[in-house]
Image 1 (cartoon, rainbow, N blue to C red):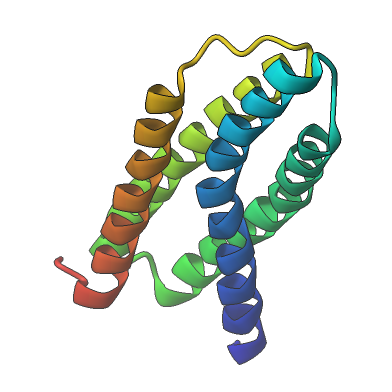
Image 2 (image 1 turned 180 degrees about the horizontal axis):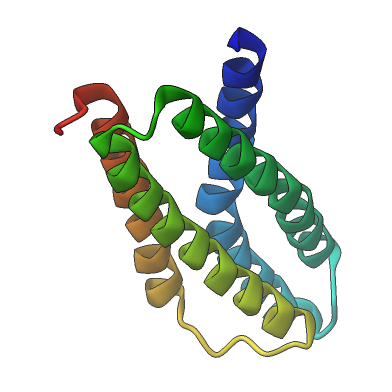
Length: 136
């Protein structure tokens, strides 16, 4: 069981890194696109980071569901699952932005992407609060 927890925590750390980094990378990628007028190294890095962390997110969610089932689904795990689902939706939206950026479509402003990035920080704090405090 400890190994499942270790894998879960490691994958969550990697996935969260991407959740925080990819929207910020999109800002710099957009600036690079404006400067070069073509697909540059920041775009490649952003796509690779997103793809790699997608696998980490899947493993994190799978191991989290396993652990919740092993614990017998206490009430706080339902809250955590709802919050993780919200982060997964945020991540999916980020993926949509990456796919559009790959085509050279950058319709979101730097300000939007910065706010979008901060939403994930609040989501991560909420998940940590649910796990540590276990309010139910």
